Image 1 (cartoon, rainbow, N blue to C red):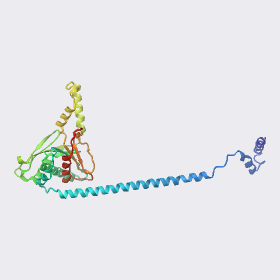
Image 2: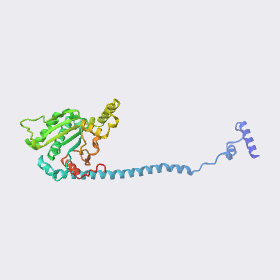
Image 3: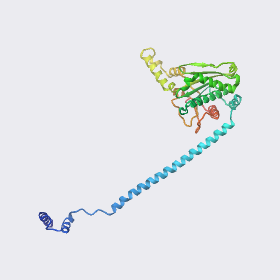
Image 4: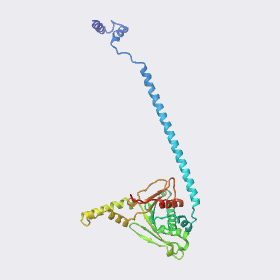
Amino acid sequence: MARTREIEVFRQDAKSQGRLLTAKDREDLLKPYLPSSPNLRAPEARNTQPIRTFLKAQLYLLIYTIIHTIFSLYIRIRQAYHATVNRSLAILYYHHRTPELIQKDVRGLSRLPQHLSVILELQPEKGGAGLEALLDDLAELSAWCASAGLPVLSVYEKTGILKHYIPATHRAISSKLHAYFGRRRPSLQIRAPHLPSFLNGDISEDFGVSGNAGHLSILLLSAEDGRSTLVDLTKTLTEMSQRDKLSSTDISLDLVDAEISESVMGEPDLLLLFGSNIKLQGYPPWQLRLTEIFHVKDNSGVEYQIFLRALYSYAKAQMRFGR
């Protein structure tokens, strides 16, 4: 009954355009039908959310800073340790460009790799100086291999720039061998896949070759000798099989291995990396199945003590061949 009366009063006030009731009367009339007032504590609870988010962000930042500081400290200590060890070994085992000292360093090893492979990197930002530094590193490695009695050295350089300068490379290596061995330097052969070999192209009266000094064969590799060679071989075998020139049953791992060994190279015994990180840079993958890989952390240059440590590591390695 009261509700009907209140409705009627409200309607009459509306018809009189608000002259029947005052504003206070209208508020009292509508107040029972209005929702309850909101809780005043809710805004306080909402206001605490930004504070909690800020505190969480600061906590995460603190944890990140602590982890980053500890890891940076570890890296610095590791780099300092390796730099000290490398410098000490470089002083203790310096070769003085004397083959006899290098032979003495490797004399106690139970075995030596018959095929050593290395990855060198051209620094294009240095321009012509980068190529000269690359040739000098290659010449030093060649002299170390010849002194240690390693018959085959394969050098992988991703861009393949050395393949365009085979005569100049031969002269640089021959000059370095002459600095180490004098007039009795070993014979030298430089070759590259799908290119003619270069054998003793610098023989003269001043740079003689002794038959008793041994022989060093250098193979120059690039990125095109890696995966692209496998792709080309696959296409060739597929076409021969489709033309009935080769049975699919004749295609085996031995056949693929023989073709790749003939067109590129066989499997090296030891792969030596001189960079600060392990990066193969597209090195031919097929030849790495049984290859021993040696790398020294935090190293950034071609050093004799790294070369020597690689030979010692190879001599101690156990070749189980998957057993």
